[in-house]
Image 1 (spheres, rainbow over the protein chains, first blue to last red):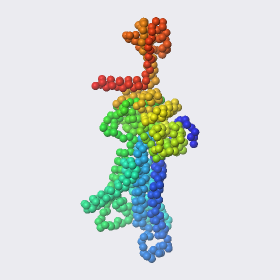
Image 2: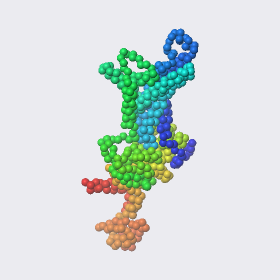
Image 3: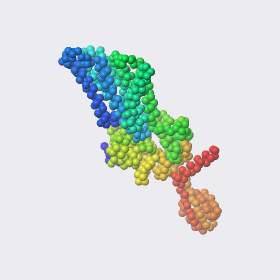
Image 4: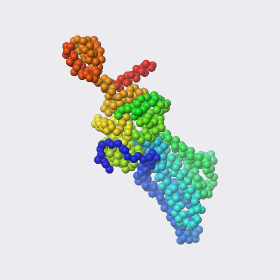
Length: 293
Length: 312
């Protein structure tokens, strides 16, 4: 490293292609996200259910355990679509606190220190900037959702008798589709709200509120008006129904009232939420603020 | 083709015309951008960087259109914004490396040049400290370092001496002079401090109310007024004036023995004393006027005011 050179010299070396600049944002975003001990703690905590589910697959495919369990006629060792739904739900809900911690780290530091004019004066567009941050957050969330769930599926494929894999391949597609929808939505929500709240700790709280408060409002709406459409504000209910359908798990009416929502309505609501988040980012991620007057 | 070509550039922001029909060609090695607050200096810079789109007309940087070739323009520009702009929880070297990588340098080269840039601006000893712990002067310098790290062709400095104490200001000016002297980078320096521009630039663009009040080469402007001399004489003033004219000077006489003249380049002030001696004329006072940037600036402001009054 030629730190002995104290004179200015022009750069005449190789330049990376334009598309690679987004990769720089992703790399630095990931480094920033995982430089926090809390992020690592949350990531490790998200591995606890994964390990439990992993052990469950081992036991389910262990002849001695099966013999023992079948004598008691217990179903909890069955590895089927319902098992993967439980795993998916557990992993996906662990992704929520992780997102609410990581997303502000990716955006609010840049906004708090007014780094956008410098960042965007480089050959990176606003879209490229948001895409880079989005991919960093998406990758962080994928590491605790889709990856563990797919590892479980692959492990089960390895342990299960021949033919199980082909018969249950839709479950793998369901896992990928369900987690992708969830972490895409979480990433958008996380980035959008982080871009509007400069104080990082407050941003974490606001993100939680953005997910949970509409759920409460939707619940009240549905209860008062005796309609299921209020559930369109309830993200946990919507996602659970979506995951059930993607994995092919029959929906169980638990509370005596059918809150079932059409898949098209759920998807439309999720797309609308993403569009609102995109509009929030569009309004906020600017190199300069325009003064009206 | 100039470094920056402006062609009837108009920018409207929030329903207000901030830049109004700017036309001109900036060719200097170091171009000063002057104007009172609200004149449109920062808006012009932001438009060149592609942050604002022209509502009509256009601007070209190194022949590239600011509307369509934003990425390529930014590739060749190093920008030091006016206000604080950094990532506080990163170390100095990491921040500059990050910016260099965003500008297209491969990671290893970016790291090497980040170290070099930080040493060059004088932050070598503090490069592993977090940027948030830097003083105001250091923050100005790290903005300069990140603008230099990727080896831009054009360096845009927006109020580079903002908030600096006299020593830090002098150091910043010295660094800018060195960059200019190195010759591989063109400079566009926006400031409302005439002295900064005077010390660092060879061309000046003066803006007022979003219009060009003056665009001139500072040196040429000074040269054109270099030989303007005012004299107070006693004795045969009229004959003295005739003889001076015969030497090729433009000359005007006023009551009280006052003479104003513009000498050709080949003459020296000494020649006037020789003629005065031969004529028996006393030269009691001689003032050789040299235009400062302040004169150029005030003249531009005055011209604009007159144009506005005529318009009314």
